[in-house]
Length: 106
Image (cartoon, rainbow, N blue to C red; front, top):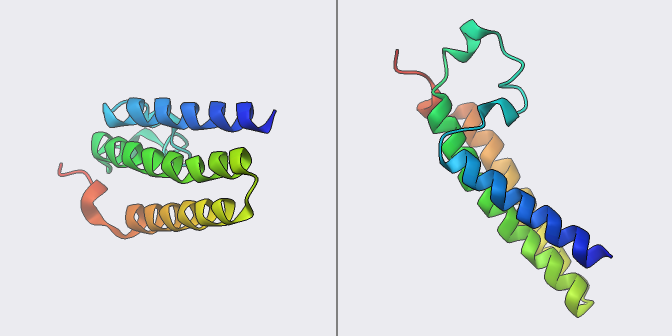
């Protein structure tokens, strides 16, 4: 059962990564979708979506270790996947918040 659920979550993250990589789906980004129209104009939504796509692919890669941990019944793979997931997530949040890359050029 856990194998099926984890596989579905990984596929969902990959599909979302594909959507984001095409520069679409900004309404799915928490925080961005709650901004006013004036606030949204301050950001380059395409660049933000493309970065989120890369982040989704990285997170799904980390989750593959969780899947392998279920298949091989070993905790070390789960720990490796969790550490990678945490590192990717923290890096992504810090990069989005501190980088001026996502500020609109307008």
